[in-house]
Length: 132
Image (cartoon, rainbow, N blue to C red; front, side, top):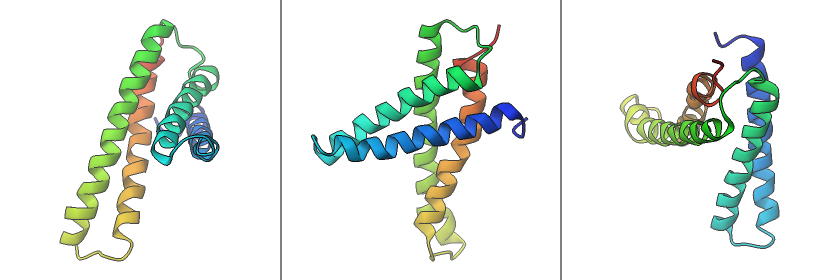
């Protein structure tokens, strides 16, 4: 299910949106403080992700636009929560219990970022950009 053309394009568009998020934060930071720039960059990245997903990944979607937007935001909220709880759970509980201390936070965050890629794809495929 995950090694198909649609999922590969989803990874590319998601990576592009992440880059937009990262670099737009630097741009916004020229005019605002860091915390405001992070929020603006996140929104910019999410809008980019939505537009790219709609145009290139889920082209066959028949979901009304307002429903797509609502579900897209909800799927991303779930993804952020997954990233947060997986990262913290691994960093503060799982890895210390396994006596892993070297790069524990980096490993935890990497896993926390990767896991939602799969659940987000499924959420966007079946909710945000559903085909009827």
